[in-house]
Length: 377
Image (cartoon, rainbow, N blue to C red; front, side, top):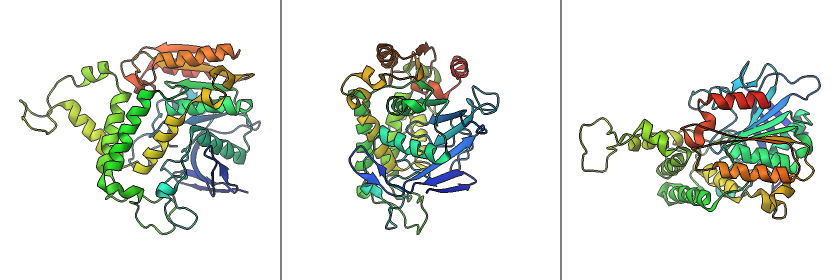
C-alpha cells in the first residue's frame, strides 16, 4: 500500500516499504512529490518521465509555488510543444534528497524532527529507484521515454542501464556518464562555502514546524554560504562567449570604478543576484546531498568498469545532445557515451548543437533543440 495525496501544487506519494540505497542503508517512509501533465492513455504506454537537474524540481510546466516564476521547461512541455501533452502523459518528480516535497534533509524523520545531516547519502541510482517505485504505484510498467538534461541526463542513463526493459527511449541532453575531477572540484568549492558559513551549524538550522513534512529553512540558515555556492556553480553553466556578450567589462550603474569591493561590474552584480535569489527557493543541506550524488555518479564503475557493459543487450533507443559551448559537460562526454552505446549494439543518435549559452543551453531558446526533441519523441 502507498499513500497518495493531491493538492494545488501537485501530488505526493508516500512509499509503504523502505527504499534500499546504494550505501547499504534504507530509507523509511519515503515521500515523492511529483506533477503530471497530459492524460495517460488506456494502454498506459504514452508516459514520459522528465528528470530534473541539480536545482530543478517537479514544476516543469507550472508556476513555481515559492517564486511564482514559470516552470523551468515551460517552453518545451505543453500542448503542441516538442514534448506534447496532447499526445503524452508527462511525469516529473522531485528527486529524493531535494527540498520541494520529496524526502530530503529538510523533511521530518520518523520521530518528528528534520533529518538534517542524519539523512543518508544518496546516489543517482537511488533517485531512480524512487522514481521506479513511483511508476509502480501509478501502474505504469513501461515508459515511452525518459528525458533529462544535466543531472536529469544522468538519471535517464541510469534508467536505461538499470531498468532498460521499462524504457523504450532515452533522451540525454548536455550530460555525462561520470563526473570529472573538475566537476567534483567545483562542487566541493560550493559545499565548503556552505559548511564554512557559521549559520550552517552542522546542518542543524531548521525551524520547529510541528508536523509539517516540508519544513522551510530558517532565515538564519547558511544563506551566505549557499549564495556563494550558487555563484560558483552558475559560472560553470555559462560560456565565456555568453558572459562577454551579455556583460563584457561594463560597469554596473556607475561611470567609474569605485576602487572598493562593491559590485563595480555588471557581471558581479548579476552573480550576486543569482546567489541571493537561490537562497529563497533551495535548501543548503539538499545542495550538499545532491552534489555528492552527482560526484559519485560513474556508470562504468557501476557495471564492472566498462561503459558499454552498462547497456549490454538493451532494447532502448537513445538520442544524445550536446552543445558546442558547454564546457561543464562537453561534447566529448556525449561522444564517449555514443561510442559505448555503439559497442553495445544499441540504436543511438547523436548531435552537437551550436548555441552561445554554455551548459544552460538546454533550458534556453535553442530552436534546433526543439526540433531534435520533438522529432525523436
